[in-house]
Length: 173
Image (cartoon, rainbow, N blue to C red; front, side, top):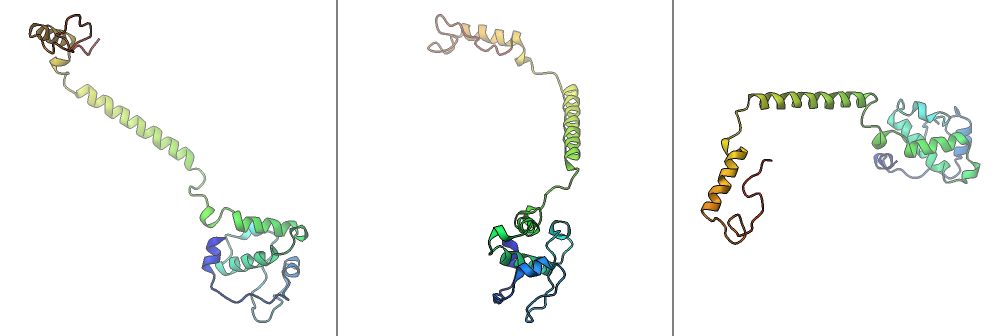
């Protein structure tokens, strides 16, 4: 509704003598005022024909509904209430769905395919990778612990301290 307000050009308000309730109830009647000869668009099925209407006709309906909504809501017909609600909050303009129907299965299949391709690529790289360096073996790390004890490395807080019971340099179990 904001976009329609911004899009329309500023024109003086229509005369108060024009009654939109009569125009809305007689769906195909011509406009009552002689100064503006815009046709009255029926409000009975706005939801179905909103996308096919030209911007001028949409603006006309919007202006009709603005005038109709100034009256008591208890006197409005059900069609007028539905049309007002649809124009204000319907799935058109900024509220139009971003994704067309049927994109969820495509998205799920695409994500599944990408995960599959990345898993295959990961295992192919792992299969062709060289062996891990010898410094990552458990035997080498235990030898590093013995060498650190011989050299009394880090005698205050580390492996060279009296009564040390930590793993030292061994990271593999």
